[in-house]
Amino acid sequence: MVLIESDDLATSPIAWHGMATDLHDTVKTLWLARPERELAVEAYTMLCGMALESLYKGMIVLITGEVLPTKYEKHELNILARAAGMDVNEKDIVTLQIYSHFVQWGGRYAYSKDPQGRTKLFRLMDKHLAENPRPDHPNGWKRFYDLWKPADDSYAKIFFDKSNGLPTG
Image (cartoon, rainbow, N blue to C red; front, side, top):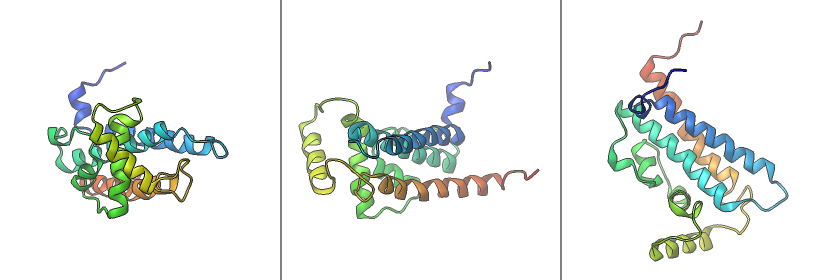
């Protein structure tokens, strides 16, 4: 077994994209596995955010050709999406804010040490989410996929443009 140095992985957009794809597949599996039962909202939402975060970070690494700059190490998906060249509308901003909160603490801990962060998240959720997200809700599969698909397509385009395409034979 050959071990890869962590610095090599940090500059590998393929490694970032591989992690993003694994998380995407996990999100899809969770969504499909629980069609009639209540979804594990906190874990599901956290995984949606983690998938997009890894994809956006991979795009930044791909664009810059360098290790992810420290200013992008936080879990601020709106900032990452813009840095990755994605156009985000108001609906996207709200969804990415919700995902960011769940990646930071909402999907991992029972509470946040930041009372303002908790209040902000609960207000966003009250305004934009149903208790049990299903396809048409901001936190459902369709909403996640509407953010994932253009980013993944953009990643592929940048990758192929930078590599002049892959060999066909």
